[in-house]
Image (cartoon, rainbow, N blue to C red; front, top):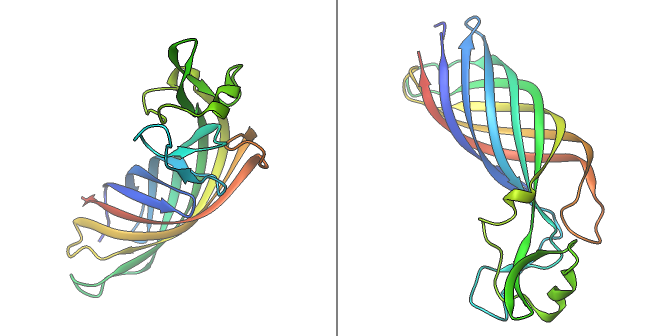
Length: 213
């Protein structure tokens, strides 16, 4: 059966982070489809280590962390049908290969400290970074650092296999397993005193839900 359109959403778990995505596509033939995908994720550095805040019952602190790293990807994938469902309860298998642009968003990791009787948010590369030695009073906040957000352009490539176990051809209920390679135009600082990277390689597993028409 020729699929005219596909729309779905999903969540991903990387070996170094997590994310979510939306996807729309159009069938080109019975065995081929063209997919467009927007993905937002957060990537962790392997040297990140959470520690309880000894000064206040707040979110755990990651000593040495410089930036949160959020890759935002917009890309195209070609999907090839490898095995179709033998019945409505079967599993179809497809191979996906594609890529596109990736924008590396860096948001400074800031902690709230006290200086001259006032509390302020500082980061490791700020003039007040020495205040970390006296201990932060509060942990990081999701609302801080957005004004200092920086964007680094890059590209990515992604091969994957998708296993769709949806009961009917109109429904998408699938698991995807794949690899992702990302390259940025400059190095992405995440943790101090560690090697900064321009190229990131990771494996992932994703779940998808949606509809076909």
